Amino acid sequence: MTMIKKILLFITFFATKLIFAQNEVLDKYPYGQDFYVGGVNQLTKEMVMVVKEKKLLPCEKSEERYNVQILVHENSSINYVKDFDTLEIQKNKCAFDFSRKIIPHLKKWMPAKVNGKFIGAIAKIEINPFYLVNSKDDPSKN
Image (cartoon, rainbow, N blue to C red; front, side, top):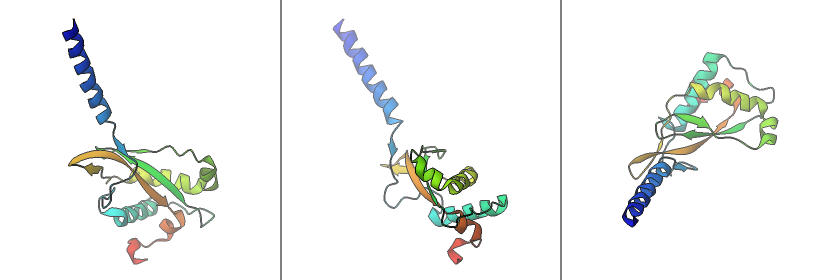
């Protein structure tokens, strides 16, 4: 009877390790790693392209900005990270809504890599509608 308990304990231990290993997420990207193919410059360039294609308008207040947090999973899919700062969202509601219009069109997310293994990590991106709407097609030439 004790041998069966030991085997069950052993199986439970490894099953638990497997389940929790798959849920590992970093709160930020490791130093030197990009969360988007081509880096932040390419991300900004693609955001400008989406804004122009969708003919999005800037916010009434040019100073409105929103810092969106995106969880990039190990398979390059994404989810928004819940923002509990409702006061900041209300203060920058237009920029918040603007971010929700452009993020789904961005497709070149890269997961973080630790010890040769892809894992999920949180990317933080500032959305500045005024800048994106008024930018040149290549923002590095602004």
